[in-house]
Image (cartoon, rainbow, N blue to C red):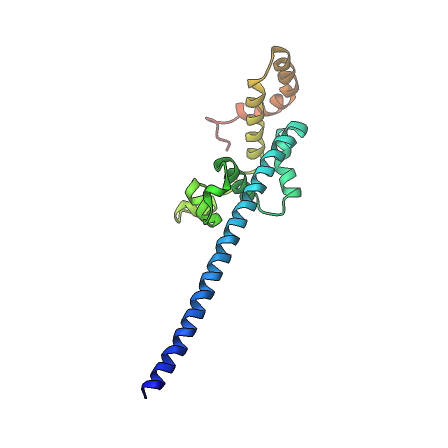
Length: 180
């Protein structure tokens, strides 16, 4: 009977050691894959940041998002995470051994959509299109105001005068800014 126990123990030990070697091999492959994924995301982020500068310089501030939607096959949030990863980490080697999610967490880059971050609170409804357009117009005017010369300011006021003429009666006919 002792030889049967010894043979069984030897067989079990061989299987245990084989599985241990496989676990070590797969762990090494996994680390290599994690490092490769992190390096690829970092390089993509650098290229996206460079392309953003080029697109904005050649086509203007509002051209980046359409370019990104047209040419990048990933999501907008993925592109933004890649870009931030490239900005925040001078060298991806400093984050070796981490998954992308772990690297994002270490750098303070959010991985959850903002609507999930509300902790169960209902998401606010999307504003109407005219409100979004008004916000874009205000941001544009503020940006232009920073680099404006007197000549440009006069032209801008002249160009917006017809819009102002159409909107003014709407605001003058409201009670405390609320339409009935």
